Amino acid sequence: MSEGISPSPHATPYGIGLALTALALGGFGIGIGEFAIMGLLPEVANGFAITPPEAGHAISAYALGVVIGAPVLTIFFARVPQKPMLIGLMVAFTLGNIASAFAPTPSLLVLFRFLSGLPHGAYFGIASLVAASVVPVNKQAGAIGRMMLGVSLSNVIGVPLITWLGQGISWRSAFAIVGAIGLATVLMITLTIPSIPVKSGASPKQELAALAIKQVWLTLLVGAIGFGGMFAVYSYIAPSLMEAAGAPAWSVPVVMSIFGMGMIGGSMIGGWLADRALHATLWGLQLFNVLVIAAFYVVGTSFVATAIDILFVGFGVAIVPAMQMRLMEVAKDAQSLAAALNHAALNIGNAMGAWLGGLAIAAGFGWTSTGWVGALLGIAGMVVFAVSMTMEARSTSAKP
Image (tube, rainbow, N blue to C red; front, top):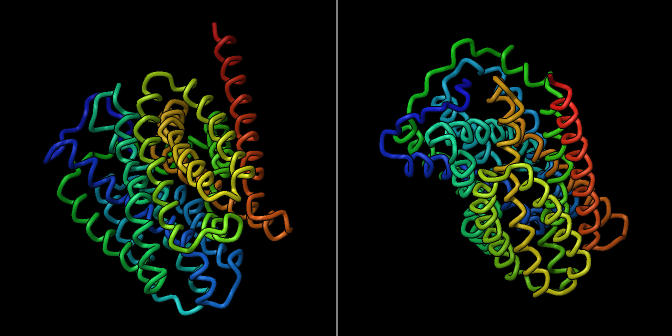
C-alpha cells in the first residue's frame, strides 16, 4: 500500500484540484461523523434516557475504533494499492454510519460508533500520502492542509446543519446523511485519484519497522497527549454552553460553526507554516493551544467570550499538517503506518480528552473545568516534544 512520498508528483486524471477535493470530501463526511454527536449529545442522552457523560461513551468508542483500526488495517493491507484501499475504507465507514443511524440501544450505538471509527485513521493516513504525492515536494504540507479542509468545512457547514436537523428531527438523521456523503466520496475517488503502484518490497514487515523508531513514538505521544486538550473542551461544548453560559439550544450549531471557521483558518495557515519552518511551527502552535484552551476555564460562563475562544480553539488544528510532516520526517520507509498512526494518536487524544473532561465534570468541578484539564494535557504534550527534540539534537551531534 505504501508508495511513500514521491519526489516526482503523480499525474491526476482531472487535475490536482479535483483529486484533493475528492480526498477532502471524505474528510468532510468523516468530520461530520466524528463531531456531530458532540453537538447532539443532549439529544442522544435524552433519546436513550441516559446522562450526557454516559452518552459521551459513543465519542470515546469512535476514537477507540480509530486507534485500533489505523495500525491494524494499514499493516494488514500493506500490499493493497492506495486507491482501492481508500475506496474500501470509505465503504466500511459508510456502512458503520448507516448502522449507527438505526442503533436500537446505547450499547449498540457504542458498538457501531467503534466500527465506524475503524477506517478513519487509515483513510486520513493514506489520503495524506496521496495528497502529498500529487504535488511538488515543497508544497506537500500545504496539500495535506488542503485535504484536511474537508474536516474543517464539516465543522462550518456540515456539523452545524446536522446538529440543527438532529435537534429538530432526530439525531439519527446525522449518521444517515454521513452515509450518503461516504457513497459520494467513493464515486469521487474512483474518478479523480490516480492509480499509484505499490512500492517495491511493501509488506506488513516494512510498515512495522516504524514501531522500532523512537522518534515516531515520541511524535505520536505528542499528538495523543497534547491534542487531547482540544477534545476535553469541545466534547462537552453543547452542555457547557447551555449549563455554564446559559445559552439557548439554537446557539450550539452557531458556536460549532465558529469552531469550524477556526479549523479552516488553521488548516490553511498550518500547512503553509509547516512548509517553511516545521519545528518552529510545532512549538508555536502547541503553546498557542495551551493558552486558548486554558482561557475557556476563565471565559466559559460568558456566551460571547466562549464563542470567541472556541474560534481560536478550532484554529489549533493548524498543528495537524505539521504533525503529519514530522512523522513523515522520522518514519523513513514506513510512511503509510506512520501517517495512519498520526490520526490514531489524535484520536487517543480525543478519547482521553473526552474521558478526563467528563471525570472533571462528574467530580463537580463544573462545566468550564474542561479548560484547565485541556491546558494540562497541552503542557504535557510540550514536555514530550521537548524530550523528542533534545534526543534528536544529541543524536545529530553524536554523528561523525
